[in-house]
Figure 1 (tube, rainbow, N blue to C red):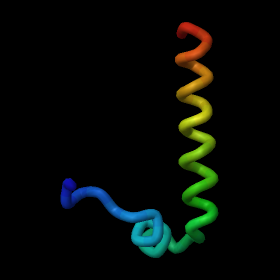
Figure 2 (figure 1 turned 90 degrees about the horizontal axis):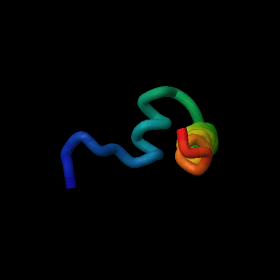
Figure 3 (figure 1 turned 45 degrees about the vertical axis):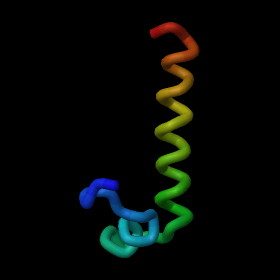
Figure 4 (figure 1 turned 135 degrees about the horizontal axis):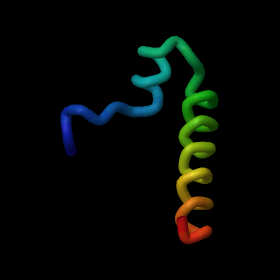
Length: 41
């Protein structure tokens, strides 16, 4: 794995937010990307 990758826990601690908040934002971003792909741009 790349040294640039961080766990959700490490990222949350660095940003001063909860792991749940990170997970929510990533899920929201992923859902947005998938809806764009499914709509055919």
